[in-house]
Length: 277
Image (cartoon, rainbow, N blue to C red):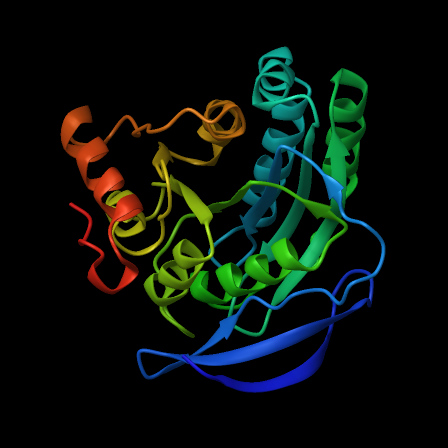
């Protein structure tokens, strides 16, 4: 796996410059996570969490708002704050990105540290106030994962656990395949969890199992529609922040089968990742 190039990349939200690296992985040109040049000492936290919200053309204004309000409500819930405390003494660092097609991703809420109820409430206010930066475009989950990986490596924090929480209602229809980026993420110790919204495709959770999630304890949860998103994302945040190993959605196959598939993906070499159920 050799380096192909190194060039400057401008951030969508705050115009900061990051290093973008490309590598050849199994013959595929994929974005690899770069490293930030040594500068100020990074602050230790217990978890780095990227929330990746679907803003593609399949998501109406009302549906997008339900996602943002659902996330805000979740961070105001005492159970989520309790999960943050359970994750460790250092707090968690959270960012929120919006994504659609392979050319469209945006940082909607920059990295914010959360350790207690007041900081969680402040983050909730920021999420609720964030505008929709992207309107329209295809569904490029792979592009969203690439962008999220860059954010995990170009911030002022460091953590043993790194998680990408991706929500969406459809399958990739353009750009790099998410499974290729997922495999790279797993080699770098990143866990990808999914929240599949079933309003348009009732089997999209199976697609997420097979192609999107990966890493230690990775899981998929489901919401039947956007109205149910808030409750689902709250439960999902509690599980991934507190470090609960495995979960499955309400439409999933029996727990042991889903858990076995998820653990198999987490521990095997990326070149031999078993397909999802």
